[in-house]
Image 1 (tube, rainbow, N blue to C red):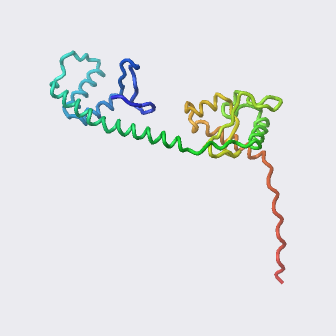
Image 2 (cartoon, one colour):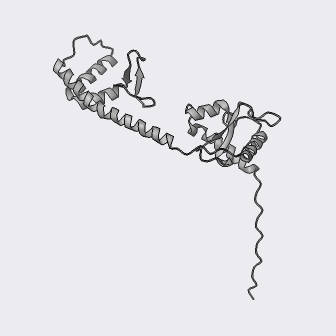
Image 3 (tube, rainbow, N blue to C red):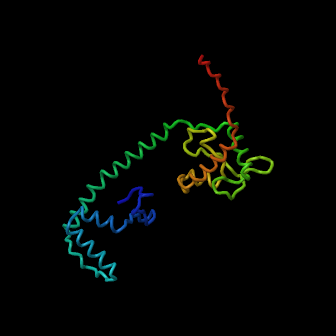
Length: 211
């Protein structure tokens, strides 16, 4: 049973290219065994219990006949076939969507300048990790990149920030969840907003004479 199970809890690929196989949590195996056969389910639970109790399960204790194994193999193939077909179809649709996505909207120069000015006010360090200097004393950007936090279709100042390359790389490849970085982004945006000039209040119209 092979497939791309990366990120699916309880399943993982092992064995390498030479002899690949899929490892599963024992509860997943037990649920699958119950689906295949009540007798097979009972046998699997018995083996698991014996293992947990430290009992050795001697070879040759399996009571399933050759016909039982052939039947289970056929049932497994029938179950897996439509799943694999669905995975191939889904992969094709995802690839098609990626090809048809609109182009990335770049962050404008004036927006970048405003963000850099804010980072300088805040100490010139990465607002995501707070460790790496992302703006040099002369105001130039160093070892940093501008990040569209929510979507590459939202390039405004309230949807972007300047962060160090390691943080940007982690957010892009998913090794750092954007939910994890959300509090840092919100904090940066709140401080950034305080730096912006307040609009002049509109003059009030004189009240009409009631007389």
